[in-house]
Length: 119
Image (cartoon, rainbow, N blue to C red; front, side, top):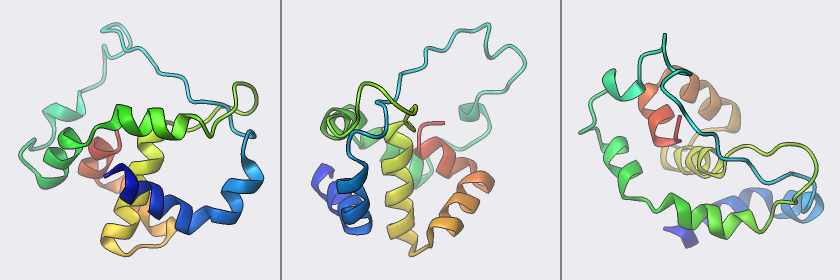
């Protein structure tokens, strides 16, 4: 799975990845506390966890992707976007044959896509 996602990302951004190497800072992991989510419903309470994207999202070893792609980020610079979000959006883009704009629009509107991408 890592090889597939890595190939898709490099295929789309081969020139960009070489130029921007070291420009984006490694994303920081956010810790969630019950206090932060006091007035928000959990996404898992709103969706069917038996959906195919939910099951696929649980089967992917996201930490392996973070370990693999984390080397491409710098320690200083502009804060990076979470690697799971970027890899998930690339997968959705290619799985559904969408443009960058269409996949972002779909992500905003589809809670299953949001869950798959780690939100």
